[in-house]
Image (cartoon, rainbow, N blue to C red; front, side, top):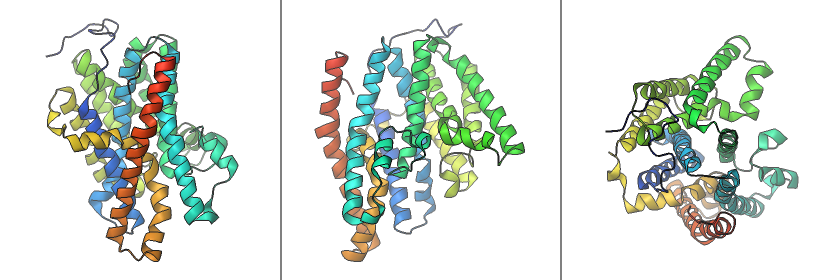
Length: 356
């Protein structure tokens, strides 16, 4: 089905056309809703195994990002274009949703209002570097995403993207050896703790790399070593289970392994064009507002839930329903009335095109 190639540099289509895959939008939407329902159920005091698995939704986000960012760089000619494209995608909604979260805290939990210093450093998405807390704990994934973007930009600048599979393979081998040794022999040392704190991508890189490999499978070649590398990425993700992210606080290892396996299988279905049945308008819509949902849902709900239950007298299910409606409504407004218009203006002015 897919042409075989001897070397990575001999790509079938070095600059694939701008394509928007509805399946990826759908997966984003499902992941965002799953993460939101997980957090809302925990905030309401429920401990439901199926909803707790929503904590793994970020793993799916990372695989999607690896695929999409590499695809974006494949058709990028200037590093400036990539920088503007990514910042215009990340910042408008992020700043607006952070402002909404801060206002909500001021109105309903003023004693928890973040300091001006915390607010300013939160705009960088590199909170661990400045030793400030996340205004919303969900923002930790943006630190991971930003570090991945920078890493890929560096490879683009030094013209090494053609060797991404070799480079990525070396990186995941190094990460396994490093964290195996430090976790086993130096578990309390800064050698084990500091890299994961300042560079959280170090325990998630294999998921982004898996996304890149899936891209190669779809557009470049279907070779046996690609499947082997995907298996290694999957196993490395399981190795990092209790060293990264938040999943180990809420679900068992077996549950996590099953969820990640499902995500890999789903991506295989996407690569081989077997996922079109998910192109349902409603799910695609949720995919379009998934970033907004993710940015707003956690701290916003933590602050408002007690007000809905204790002051308004709503029962937990009604409170969750109202919070879900508010989050989806605000995410829709911000996405279509702020994010997309701003993206269009910025990219048209500085890049010359205005895709999302």
